[in-house]
Amino acid sequence: MWVHLGHFLGVCIATFFDAIGTTLLGRIVDLAFAVSLAVAILYKKQKQGGWRVMLDHWSSEYRAGLKFALGAAVVIYTPVIIWSVGKAAYVDHTGLSARLVRIRNESTDYRQTCTNDISNLKSDSAVKDGINRTLDKQNRDQQGTINGCLSQAMKLLTPEEQKISALIFHSDQKNKVIEWIVLINKTIQYPRILVSCNQPVLSADLHMVGDTVSIGGPVRVANNAWEIQIVDPPWSPMHPFYAKLSYAGDTPIGCSFTTR
Image (cartoon, rainbow, N blue to C red):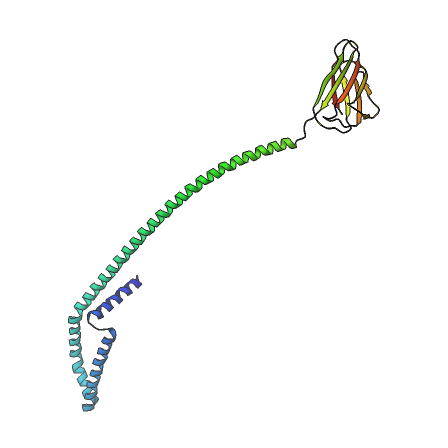
């Protein structure tokens, strides 16, 4: 508040001195000239009649002179002061109006800039959102592919389940002799193969197809079961197992082949 009041008063003073056609320094010089003139007159009176005469002159003249000077100043400068205050108010008003217009224009420009920036940001956001959705879909698709590959890899890494397939190579029910070729899907080192049947087995010829090294040959482990442990070769898809059994009983024989 005081800052604005001081600025307004300063404008009034500057306008006043502009209106009377001189500067503050010129007014000071005029005042100094008037004071020096009065001092010179009083000094002359003091020389002519002494201090008493000077004081009498001062006391008789200064009141009338001062009143006249003040009256003249009021008459002359009052309109100028009023005009200076009005002009200062007008100058402040026009300056304020110009500032308001400038601020309004700057505000409009700034608002337009903000609107453009917001529009650009929305466009960029929409583009980035579309890209993000595309990348997210690609990521989900790739993740699904990766999961499928991992699932297939786990299946490939999982050890294959052992499967044994027994095929009847020859069957002579009259003489009660049956021959089997037994296949396996894995390679087993030193297999111990157990042959179990639903009929009593009288004798068993058990070996790998080709030359076979075994421990002790076939061994009866039950009335209807025989066992053999192969040393060489390993039981594999390349080396099928051969079994020839003689059995007792009047019904067809059925056998199973397991490892232990």
